Amino acid sequence: MSAWIPDTAPTLAAFFSLLPGPFPLLPLIATVLAVAYLVGAIRLWRQGRRWPVWRAVSFLVGCGALAATTGLGVEAYGYALLSVFMFQQLTLMMAIPPLLVLGSPGTLLLRATPHHGPGKAVLRAAHRGLRCAAARWALSPWVALPIYLASFYGLYLAGFADDILSIPGGHVAMEILFLLAGIVFTIPILSSDPLPMRISHGGRALDVFAEAALHAFFGVFLMMATTMLVTQFVASTEALGIDPLEDQRVAGGLAWSYGEAPTLLMLVYVMHRWFRDDTARAAADDRFADAHGTSELDAYNAYLSKLGKKDI
Image 1 (spheres, helix red, strand yellow):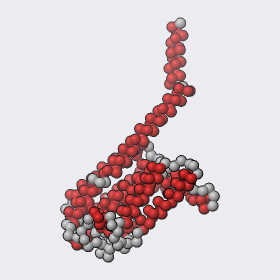
Image 2 (cartoon, one colour):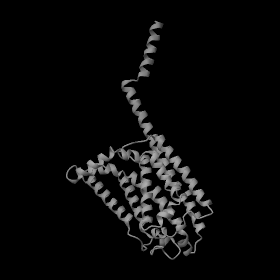
Image 3 (spheres, one colour):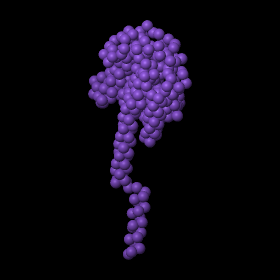
Image 4 (cartoon, one colour):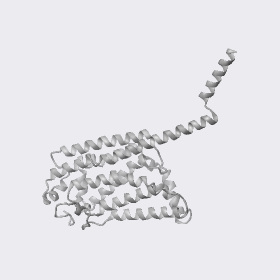
C-alpha cells in the first residue's frame, strides 16, 4: 500500500485539500498546456486578430479540472477507494476532453505560431501530422470507440486494472491512458480543428449513442456485481472502515449517472451543429439557385415553355 494513502474517511473538504501524493505529473502537464495556450491567445489578441474568448475559457477550465482531479486530495483517495478512482476516470475521459477539444488548440497553434525560427519547425511538424496516416487511423471510429470502451470493459472485466495498479506508477499511467482515450474519442466528434479525417454528423451522433448505451450497461453491471472486480482496493477500503462491495456499487452508480451527463451534452452539441450546418448549406443552395438557377428548375421552365408553344 502506498505511503500517501489517507487513513481517515473521505470528506468533501478532504477531496479539495492538498494531501501528500506522488510526483504531480498531470497537474504539471495541465499547467504547461494552460500557459502555452494563453501565450498563443494573447499573441493573437495583441495583433488585433480574433480568437473567441469562450474557446480560451473552455480550454483553461479543462486544464484546471485536470490539475484538480489529479493534484488535490481526490488523487490521494483515488489510491484507496474504487469509487473515487472511478470518479477520476470518468472526469478524465468524459468531462475534461470535451473542454480541451472545444478550445481548438490545434487551430490556435497554427494561427499563433511564428512562421520563422523554431516556430517554422513546429508548423512543419503540425502539417506533417495532419497528413499522417497513423493519425487518420487513430481518429477513426473503428479505433477510437473500441479503445474508449476497452478502458472500461477491458480493464475491469479482464483483470488488467489489478495488474497495472499493482506496479509503481501504475495509477498515474492509467490516468494518462484515460485522458488520452477520452481525447482520441472526443476529437472526431467535437473538434473544429483541421483533422486528417472527418466523419459525418450522423456518424458522430451514432458514436455518441453507442458509447452512451454501452457505458450505461457497464455502470449497471458494476452496481449488480457480487464480487470485487478490482481487488487492489479491498485492503485500503476496509482500512477506512468502508465495505468494498458497497464502495464498488457507488462506483457503478457514478458510471451510470455522472458518466451519462457529459455524453448527453456532447450529443446535444452534435445535433446543434448538424442542424446549423444543414441550415447554412440549404441557405447557400437557395442563394446559388436564385442567382444561377438549377438544372431541375431550368428543365421545368423549359417544359412550361414548350407547353405554352403548343397552346399557341
